[in-house]
Length: 345
Image (cartoon, rainbow, N blue to C red; front, side, top):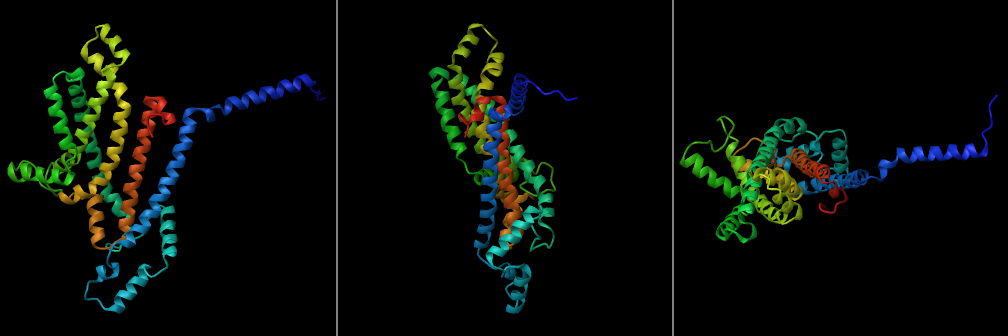
């Protein structure tokens, strides 16, 4: 026989369920939940804008893809037939529907130039571009952080003003050095003059060294300047004075106490630079005939290969968005205060 709960027991039971539900969904009120919701909304908006802009910008490229494929001596009938086969005469909205449908299925259509799926072209070229961008950002981090901290420590409080002035002027000049100019100088010095590294191609050992150096030169000194200023700021904090008072060794003082406190702004800038490096590979890969996505997109523009252009631009844009998202997550793990966007937008 089922017993009927007393009114007091029912109230207590409901309160217990309410507390359990509250504990179960408490994570929704956490900083990480707010961060995830905010970033997810930003991700959807960014991807939507990326898809729309990528589709609209490609038809603005001057020239007719059918003429580019058939040659200038092709008959008007042949050009018209090819345009119809490629769907270039369809209304713009219908082309966008086809474009969007391919993306939803994880495809980018077939290349006008090669007649193969664009996804296959991207899969072949992407490792080269990823290696170039990641190698460049490793150079930036390994060189810029120690260099910026060293100069910041040596010139703190107005000490060694000549060194501070020389570093500021040199770093400012090199940080503004265009990558393609740096690449040209590196080719002249190391490939043509000293003949120690290849100027391009993939057949020689070390073919990726000069492109990485050209891509990393400006960002390295841009980050070093920021690290130097952050080092100034951190060294003036009370906890650093306390650490000095305990007569800690210099390595422990700067690596254990100073470095983690300047990583937030450094990582933020480094993430933005990495996203820019991915896009900057378009120029550098062309300068060095480096067989990555950048060189492929330039050649596709010449041949009016719309699907390949759109596919590569989408992938490069997606990588940049994901890199920024990853940096935000890493910053949140290092400094939870950034989850609210207080120090990082």
